[in-house]
Amino acid sequence: MRRLLVTTLLSSIVIVLFLYMVRRVIVAGVLGVIIAVYLRPLYLRLLRLTRRRAPAALLTLVVIVVPVLAAIAYSYAELSDLAKHVDVNREAIAAQVTAAVRTIPFLEDANVGASVRAWVLTTSAYGARLPGMLRGLVVGFSIAATVFIFTAFYILMDADVLATWMRSKIPPRYAELRVALETSVSGVLYGAIYSTLVTQTLKSAMILAMNLVFGVPLAAVLAILSFIIGFFPIVGSWSVYVPTALWLLVFRGATVPAIVMLLVGFLGNTLFISMYLRPKLAADRSRVLNFYWMLVALVTGVYTFGLAGILIGPILIGMLKAIIDTVSATKGWRVLDESDADESIAGATA
Image (cartoon, helix red, strand yellow):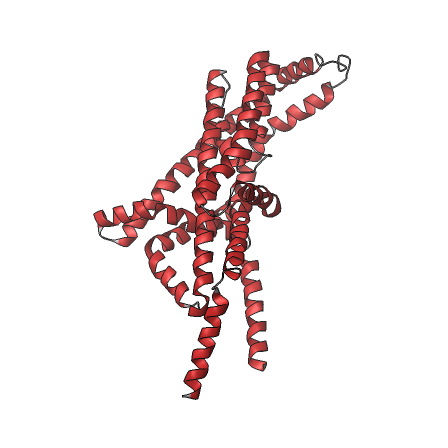
């Protein structure tokens, strides 16, 4: 009993401290594992060509890292130019926004000039704050990127060894539960990641197409921004297409394009893609949860755990389903446990 208490106490302390230590990079680690699993076929193909594990893993990671860095650099340069433009033309922009606001019913005589100028001034100062904001994010981003890259690198090269080691640590009596958990977790993870990537690409492509058709500046940057923030169901890409529609209405006087932007964005991106297509694809690909439970997992997971909820939500419900299926089975792990116990008693008697 003393050994049990000491072991449990020490294990609890170590686990709590470990989770506290990695709390800021746990999402990066999980994403590293998932991306590595998805890129394993490419890694194995490159391994056959290079015949060396480390170069093959490095080349595989380049496929992900280089495009992401290029998109970040491009977006930073474009946003800096936009901030400089706003700073130079802030008086004209403030006057145009004020005139547009006064065309709204019941606001014809509203004194909004001071508020609009303050808003434009804040926006124009964004360019000056960008370097400081970037320096503030460098430390956290560097640590997360390091964890992501090395985790993906490790999984690419030693995924089979790691999986074998983990299975060897689970007693045979829990084999049925282990298989059920592996099947459910891998299925929901595959479905959630696949559906998220596909739907985010579709939404960003729609935003990019409308921006190009209507002549919206920073079309590619807005599409990249839509891809990133659109991971959040309901509250997502609307924060891109709504301001874009307002810009078309205020600075271009383009009422019809603004309405089209709002309708396509709300009906297509928010309702159809986020609330129907994403859980539908995730459920079909996972073959574990149906549409309703996948919808609940994605939506509630994000609002409970933040961005990590895209993975944690489906994992939790998938594990719950696996446990219920195993426990309610006619021959579950309880029967295996009893047989193991009988064999142990027989061995001790002999």
